[in-house]
Structure formats: C-alpha cells, structure tokens
Amino acid sequence: MYLPPHDPHVDDPMRFKPLFRVHLMERKSATVECMYGHKGPHNGHIQIVKKDEFSTKCNQTDHHRMSGGRQEEFRTWLREEWGRTLEDIFHEHMQELILMKFIYTSQYDNCLTYRRIYLPPSRPDDLIKPGLFKGTYGSHGLEIVMLSFHGRCARGTKITGDPNIPAGQQTVEIDLRHRIQLPDVENLRNFNELSRLVLEVREQVRQEQQQQQDGEGPAPPQGLLSARGPPGAPAEEGGDPRGGAAAAEQPAQSGQGQPFVLPVGVSSRNEDYPRTCRMCFYGTGLIAGHGFTSPERTPGVFVLFDEDRFGFVWLELKSFSLYSRVQATFRNADAPSPQAFEEMLKNIQSLTS
Ligand SMILES: [Zn+2]
Image (cartoon, rainbow, N blue to C red; front, side, top):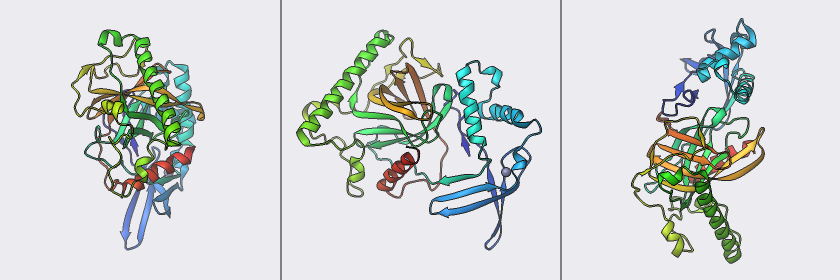
C-alpha cells in the first residue's frame, strides 16, 4: 500500500506499507500471509477473481485487534497515517472527517478487492508529463490525483476518495483552450478581481458551447473526442474547428515565470506554495456534500508552477489545493493503448457514480 506523506507536506515521498506477502514454495504451491496490524504476519488468502482483479482475505483478524480496543487502534492509526494526535487537531469538523476515514477503512480488516489501474499515456506535446500527484484537500488531508490529457482538456481523476467525493471522480477539469492572464501581484491579492476574471471566462465558455450547439448540433462531451479517434491517431489538439479567435488562446509553448500569490481570504493548507508560476488556465472543480450528494462543477483556476507541481484555486470554496508529483515509479503500469486508458477511467468513475 502506498500512503501519501503527512498533511500538508506534498513534496515528501510516498510511504510504503506491505499488506500481504506470498511465499513461493515450489511449483504451484505458495503460502500467503497477512501483514495488517501490529502482531506480525499471520495466515491470509489471495484469490484471483477475474482478469485484472484479485481479492485478499485475512484468516486471523484477531491479529489486527489491540489490547486497548478500538480507542488504541484509532490512536495508533492516527499517529501512523497522519503523524498527529487527536489533541493536535483542534478543528472539530476535521476530527469528524478523520474518524469517518478510520471507521471506513478499518471495517474491511484487510479483506479487499483490487482492480488494475493504468498510468495515463503521455505525448510530447502535453503541457507537462501526466501521472500521479499528491494534493492538499483541506480537512481531508492529502489525496492522490491522476492528471491526464485529452486533447483540449486535462483532467484530474481522484485515485483516493473521501466522504464528499469518492475515488474515480474528476476532481478538476482544465480547459486548455482558455488561458487566464493573472493580474499583477498587487491586484492578484484582491479576491474579487480574480473572481471577476474567472467568471468572465466561464461566461465565454458558456457562450461558445451555446454557439456550438446552435451551429453544429450537440457538442460532443469534452474529453471523449480523443477516445473516438482511430488507434494511434493524434488527437484534435490545436485543430479548433472555429479557428480565428480561439487560435489566439492556444497554450504558449513556453511561459516565462510570473509572480504568483494567493488572493487574501483564500485558504491554503500549505503556506510554502511556489511564488512564481508558468501559466494559468480556466478550469472547474467538483464539490459535493457528504456521501457525494448534489455534486456540482464549480469554476476555478489551474495554476501551472513547474514540471512537477500545479495548483487549483477553488473559487466558491475560497480555498487552494497544491499538487506535487508522485516520484515513485511503478512497473508494468502503462496502458496498452489510449483507448484502454479511457475505458479504465470510465470504469472507475462508474463504480462510484
Ligand atoms: Zn490479518
């Protein structure tokens, strides 16, 4: 199991914790041990359900229990997972969210079903290399997001879930056709100024979608375009059918660094976010109530800092997420084709929709 570093240190490496081990004895014979809990390895079981799916089971879950009961188990989990004690966390709502996560994850006792996910395919003209990122999600702590490129848009798909938005959903969607030119630092401090800029772009996007619907029939859902192309064909990047005005909005190939600062009133878990950025784009972020109730895409700003870091300003939440690349390497994780990757994205999203 890969765990994100402790909140809010997004640049720290992922942590690694073995959950099972398999001893290969001789031909077609093996023993499985569960390594969950603090009493050492004990008897477990692994079953291959179907292609790209397997399940694990612990046969001695009493090995997961602690003498101090649930209370001790929770405190130990909190120390390991968050590097904190409950007393450290003053915020009552955050305590509730953390308790929810403990109850949710510990109820399975290492009996889990695993499904394969692929890393996103990359192309030379991508804004940055796609891949996995650790991101700050306010009281939810750090979460893992997969950044992938789909022609005119980029997507951040949640690989870990939380009580509001489950894994598989698109937490951020970036409109690569609509760059946002930030005002100079002094005016950037003014939240209303940034808000005005972003809502202007949102209105422009809405009008363009309307035109597309009126003139060319229903617009295809964003991002699905590249999945429909013939295998290996370059996606429609840059080939904007409307040309003209939109051509001026093409992402620049190289942006000079420009000063960046969060507007006053926008909260960030991490105060040491980068103070220069390469470029910004209009985007939307998914918010919902607990249990993924009334999900809604809300406007925001995608901020590209460098090859390994980006940020997202959630306008309605008045908060900022900072994302940093997962540097761990995973073997055999490439999708066999771009279509297989799109298919996987759809599947993980439908599991929780
Ligand atoms: Zn066990």
